[in-house]
Each structure stands twice: as C-alpha cells, then as structure tokens.
Length: 355
Ligand code: MEV
Image 1 (cartoon, rainbow, N blue to C red):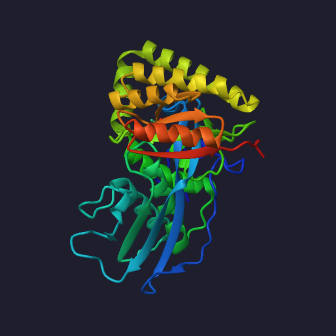
Image 2: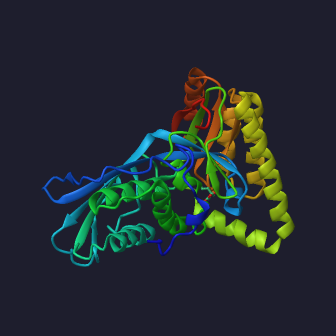
C-alpha cells in the first residue's frame, strides 16, 4: 500500500547494502516490563561530511554514521488512553535531551509516523501507546537525532504491529517525520542513521562511496543548538529571490563534494581535508555558521586537523575535523575540549568499496 505522505518512494531503490540502512527487522514482539505487547528499535547518529543544504536541491552530499551515538525506542500498547494525551501516552527519557518533551508530547512528525504505521497495519484496536526514547545523540546539534529517533521508532512499530517493512519503506516512514522536522528534508539523515557505511546521496539517489584509507572524524559540539528547519527555510527564501546565487552555491558545493569523493576513493586525506575547510567557507558565506562554530574550526586547524567545518543545518550545532589516525583524533578532541567544545566524539571513516 503506498504511504500517503511518502515524499520520494519512487526515487529510492534499495541496491547496495548499507546505503538504505539495515532493512527488515525481526517481527516477534518483545516482552515489555509488564508483559504488554511491545517493540524495540535502534538507530545511530550521523555527520554530514560535505554537501549539506545543497543536497536539499539534489546536489551530492556525503554523510558518515556515528555508531557510538545511538538511540533506542520502545513502544508498548497501553490498555486505556491516558487523559489529555490523545491516542498516545508518550513517556520519554530526556536524560540526554533526545526529544524535546517537557510537556510529554511527541513532536508532530513522530505522531504522523505512528498514525501512518497504525493505519497501514489496520490496528484500530490499539487505544493508546507508550513511547520510550533513550538516546545518546544530543538533540538539535546536526547529528541526526530526529532521524535516528524516527528510524528507531519505525523499527519498534514494525516489530510491534507487526509490519514487514522493506528498507525503502523504513526510509519513507523516517521521511514522514523528517519532512515535519526540517521543513524540506533531502533524506540523507534518514539514510545515514541506518547505515554502517558512509552514504552518498546524489540527485536523490543513495549509494555507498568507496573509501581507500581509514580516516577519523572528530565531532565537537559548540554547546549551542543548531536550527536546521530555520536554516533550510532561510536559504529557500534567499535562493527564491536570487536564482543565480543558488546556482553558484550548488555548483561550488557539487565541485567540492566531487573532489572529496575522488580523494576518499584515492586515500588522499590532505586533499579531502581541504575540501572540508573550503566547504565551511562556502556555508559560512551564507551566514550558516556562528562565532563559536568558527572558533572551533580555527582551533581544529591550528592543532593539526587536515580540514574542519560546520556540519548539518548550522546556525549553531557541531563542527567536524578530519585526521588520519585515531591517535591524532584523540589529541585533537582533547584540544577542542580545552578550547570551548561542550563535548567531543571521534568516529572512523572505514575503508571499503560498494558491494
Ligand atoms: C541536515 O543534516 C542536512 C540538511 O542538508 C537538510 C537535509 O538534507 O535534509 C541541512
């Protein structure tokens, strides 16, 4: 059955392992604490290596998974709807700020996702549902928190209802929520939060880019939230008025990403690093960076990073920096911690070729 809100089902065909995520999930509902029927799903964070914003217009972008930053979502059937909370009784664990839920209400995109899944499964017998989110992925930092929660929730619903979802269907469900969260979502976050390999999205077509040599990414949180939806809307308005500016941006971003892809394929990490730094300049020229983010980029470059840039939607959020070894990544993370980063993480870009 086609999904009513599917933004690009036809454009996405599963063809390479990793590119569309891990695909089908086990369908046996797992026992929940009180023995209620339940399902559990897991997904992880991501960083955009290059091409953010341009990818919204079909230009290429590359994302790298952050497997150590993960989230787990559990959904359980409740016997009765809770007063005042509509169909669901969302109970989130906000220790790591996974979902802004001070009022106990799930974001509208996730509610839409749940509605779609219930309708698809024809489960009109479920009076209420409890949704638990446990996440290490800081919310609003451009690290894919919203997409990871949506993906984990989709897996959890797939297990509970049950729904035998293909990888392309999982992508569509995540996009239901992402389109609400970002306004206009390219799909790269939806893909990368379920992939164990880097993801290239070009002309809305996902694939796995070849990587010749191991490289390391240091992620540094500026401590102030990014604003992806606002940033996407801001560029949309600016480009609507100045088509030439849009074309120049897309051409430059495409050229940097294509050079970076060649460098990844040939193991030329210094060349790759230069594309990252140039990409930062391009995005900063569009007013997408902030003083704190620029300062972290400068710190990273001053302490030996091969390249550094803002990552994701911008207007705050995180910086990524490139190194060639794990030791250099740890060293750089320590320098960023000393120089204003709120938190840092490191992640490898693992060598490999498309299957
Ligand atoms: C957000 O991680 C990346 C953006 O390009 C938005 C999108 O691709 O959906 C800013």
